[in-house]
Image (tube, rainbow, N blue to C red; front, side, top):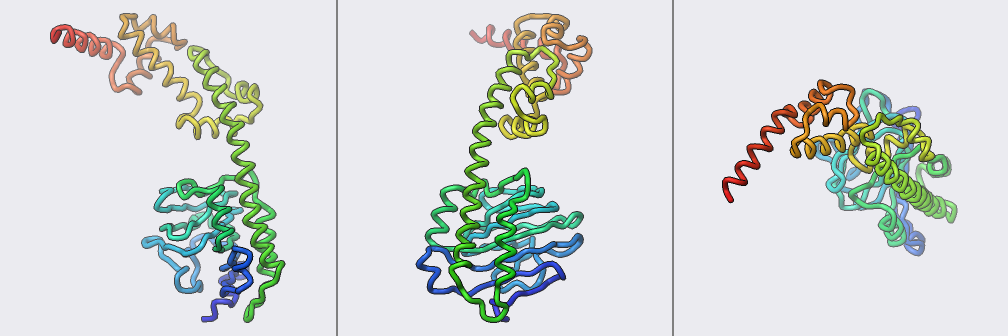
Length: 310
């Protein structure tokens, strides 16, 4: 099989693999291959026809000796690697494959997906990727599709020669530009993340100060200059809990201290802002695995044990 040939798997799916060109070494980047297309629902992934070394089964996965940038502009799927573990993919997103790193990924059989990808290696490429991406966190979730990356991939496919691919300064510059686009996206994302974390820290302080109030999460998000969906997503990513559950955790931690200090269940319920002792007791039992009164008795027994051992 000619590794340089374009292989059309479906009417709207094609890819191209390239042999090494000497001039690429001067630029520090080697273009290995590229492709794009729609993976239809209920189709095996990856589609057949790729050269040996690129084909893999979901059960076995694979290891490449190059980097790849994969853009998912529509659909859903999943990704797994040795360093990152399992990640659910929802478009739009980008993920990066690292050389010598076991991985596997596939589109959902229910939704399929639309993908654009490019494979490359080289000293310069490696220095850029290592400066902005980590094997442990190779997925970038986006608000909108990265149109420039998609357009660059499509341009490479349009200008590729099926039988005798020719290198040109335009081809090399397109590859460098794609790596640069990834760099720009990640830097912008990091800046947004840092700003978002400052806002989430402020939200946590507000929740801590008003732990016994019924908070309006839409209003809080607006106060922080964030949409409700962005606020909830970044709060979950930062704390591991949705805002309401985070507040509930604070309340129950306070409840345990108050109960251990001898406060009655009704007093604790009122102080924490619950509508009734019954509501508070049910929630406490569900989260802690025992009722407030059982918790009080447990603490008394523990203290008696400590005193008797002194």
